[in-house]
Image (cartoon, rainbow, N blue to C red):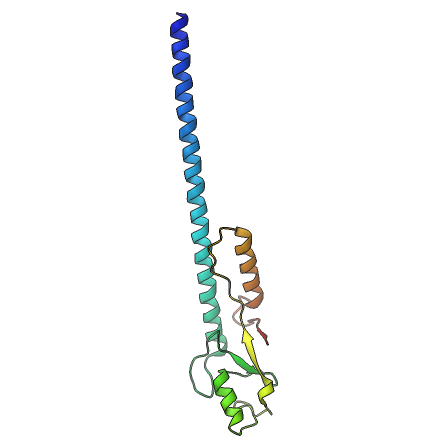
Length: 156
């Protein structure tokens, strides 16, 4: 009887060990899946935020009045006296070829009045750190207010 009890106890211990192994395996796989999901979710959020920035630039600034081409987030320049927006090449050429006024409102303008608008874009790093994503998101939010009527930009 004692041998049967010991045998049953050994089988029970083996089953519990297998159960613990399976639970540990499932916990690790779940953790890996969650980390992968978080990483992909963060990457997608960054891409969507960057697409939103491009949309806001397009919506807010439209096109360059000189060449009639769409302004994009990497090539938005203003005249600091009146805040009208242009492509760098267009407004530089406009002023260097003799016109000393803003083409839109005729305020006096020189080459030193041309300033670049910038939008800080969230980085597309593959780091898994949620804190870094939150920081990137926070920086981007500082650069672009999500209200289409009040986009916050800076200029250099």
